[in-house]
Amino acid sequence: MATDKSSIFEDVYAVVRLIPQGRVTSYGAIAQFLGKKSGARLVGWAMNASHADPSIPAHRVVNSSGILTGKGFFGGNLMQELLEAEGLVIKNDKIVDFKKHLWIPSEELL
DNA sequence: AGCGTGACGTGTA
DNA sequence: GTACACGCCACGC
Image (tube, rainbow, N blue to C red):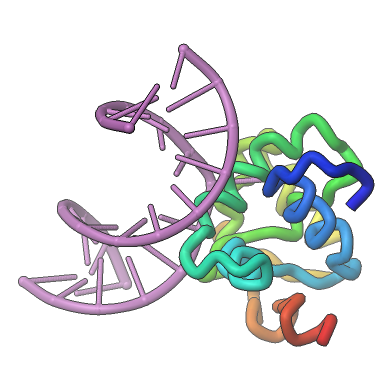
């Protein structure tokens, strides 16, 4: 949004930044919202680049199982603590009641 | 233009 | 329930 890079990163960043606190979304949901049916990998790849932008709550993005796949990129349990700080409950690296906290842009933003 | 890679997703065994 | 393979799109070399 802020730029005309035409790169998928910007699109992913924009969506991730819209994720409300205490909510989470999945790579597939974002990919679907962007129009990529199975572009979940692209989202994950974009998130990898999100490290350059600390304003991106990448910790709110998990895989379709609600597992903190990218926690290793945050360093230890930082990702889990961030989510717990937002009222979420993490158990065994996965979000409890994941579907309950799931935030789908294509539905919430509709 | 082709190959390899990736914080994924889904299906099948 | 776990393990493996395929598919999918975009970027870097």
